[in-house]
Length: 85
Image 1 (tube, helix red, strand yellow):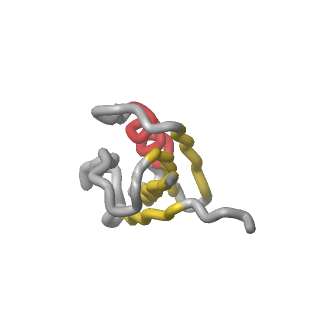
Image 2 (spheres, helix red, strand yellow):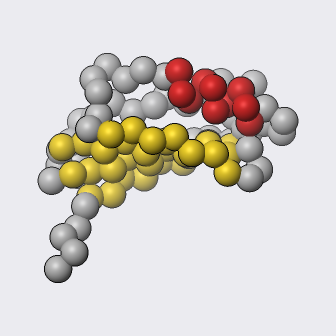
């Protein structure tokens, strides 16, 4: 089964570039199958990692950035892949 972990943060006003750089620099204790990083309006950053694991598996996740970068708590979601049938 493949699980996608989504991590989304909104930067303090004007610090979106710094939050993006911070998120890209975060290393996980083990490598996911795939990792992608996105940015969006309002200084938001999204990181999606894919893992060969169950939905409730113990997986490494990106930490919370400090309050100097994040304008609110990080949002996190887990999704499992579904066959296209």
